[in-house]
Image 1 (cartoon, rainbow over the protein chains, first blue to last red):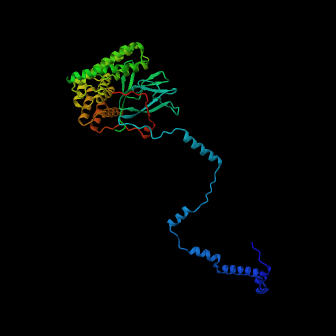
Image 2: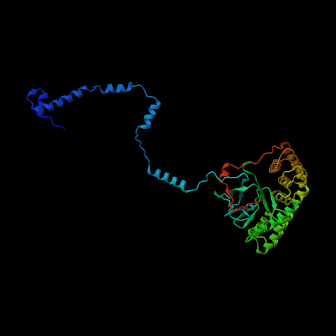
Image 3: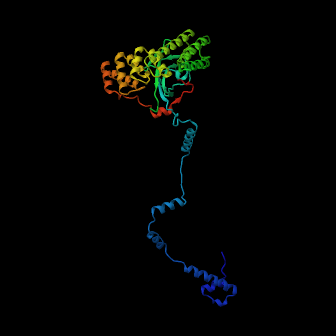
Length: 201
Length: 224
């Protein structure tokens, strides 16, 4: 802050005439006088008047308000509990790590869906073995996710005729009792006979 | 060179290839002592223009089920005989594609389900230019549930006359069995389905969730 000379101060207070000032003091007095004139030129509206002026201003359109809202800076406050943050992080990690089922396989015109269901309480594994696996084990393993003894599986197969049997616990060959259509296997047992239709039918 | 001679030469050329493929697929899957005999059965079938895949499948099945060697050979031989019978029946019935592997295999399977050979001719006549296999299996389905063979064939012939084809014949049989399960007599069940023809219900399509969970069988072999 600049210091006002005491003599200049006395002139401003009207105690002494300006003639008693030296050149430097006169220059300071002139600067102060110019500043005073500049301040007196500013509008002197009261706070109430300025508020009422804002109130009377015509309302802006929704688009203008939205544009202002989008371009202005906003302060956002987020409150959280650390325990929920940890749970959310764990859920996101699970989604990233555990493979999902997605849209499923692409199925051609000459392919269809076969669903196998069998009731085998206490079984450790149930396998569907048939002409569509070249009679090899392990290609179509059924699942019993809820441990209710009902084993299920769904596979994509070529359209047409197929024969199969269930293999329980890797050694017991069982005819599907729900197939409804059977053919002698030539070895003293019956294979289930399955006709697969095109998914595009 | 006439057509018949060309076909015989082609089949003769193809049979060693079929045999080599059969040996490769059977090696390690059937008792070693049976390999030579099974190979000759497959080679004979290929030479005769029969589908060989059902024979290979029967041998693989016997090996997977731990069946004794002589029973595997007997079963594969019986399958070859059945394929020959099926092909002969299709030819004598004037079937337009008597050597179609899928059709011969389907008819052979129907014969092994107890369908009488005479039916092949009757259904082939009712379905000119169309495979008779599904209709034969539909008759076998009905006979298996106690329906008379003649009435069952009549129902299929009527379905064919009204435009049904292919696996839709299995839907006719399923509709009749369903009527039976509702408590109708065999005659009433057939009459009810005959009144529905050709609009018998189709089986429900698999749910999208089931389709999306379906797995592809990795070790399946391309079959004719």
